[in-house]
Length: 359
Image (cartoon, rainbow, N blue to C red):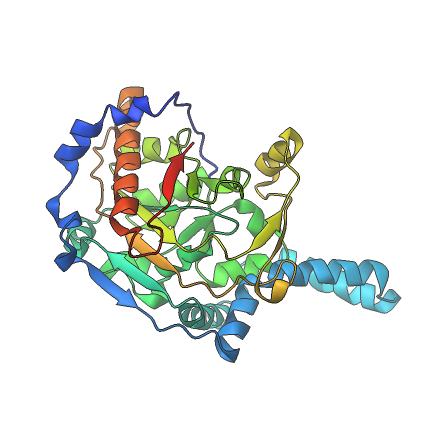
């Protein structure tokens, strides 16, 4: 999903060496559950929430059905109308029709909050506020990607799960391919999505506007393995580009983990190098997935989504003088903090027997 260039890391030893640094960085507030801010929404997967989630996440299936109908069933005039409307969707601004679209997006997010019974835990809200008061943009690095990392909607500004300016700024950076697909480009713009390219990434950091993104990207999807159900696979060892950009601007990085994304969909995809090449080139995995009611490319099952937000990792500003040593150091701290975050919350989230497998 990330468009920034990533560098190699040879083994877990490279970052476990940074444990003393991590211990120095970590604050006891992360372990003090009395300071955690918990917001838990009762789950409701009834008619209205289901319609809203379909309008948000159901467009993969809708677009596919539209293509099949156009090819096999539509008459001449129907094809002309469908092609015309599709072309119009591609040439209109992504946020068309502006305010009306954003109101629709806000409604979808509010209903999705009910559909998934969203629960968020902020371990150190005071620390986030401290950074916001310094006019710093925070990078919320969300994990895992899974089939679709839809749980990033927890950062939607309309839900106000984060405090002050951070909550108001809330945006999600996602694969640029989304914004080249008719209809989907509008929907994801309405729900505050932006393309995850270097220009957008740095632009928001320089302007002090926080955001979330998923560093594992589509590569993480290809590593899913049903034969190892206890493993939660994260593709992070080579994902260092966001740390380099954070060092360039001195922007704090916040580890985030979303529980219960797995199980949202059943899936199948052809494994092999060709699939990997297509995924990297297109930014989308050639995959067949099915969700609620076993509808292909439909909406996810109404899982109870549980998002935990750790303490911000302070990153120094090195400008144009970023060194590989600094990148490795803070990348290691990030992975250690993420693993610790997972361990602190996995039992409450029903992941007691599961373990992170960082690749």
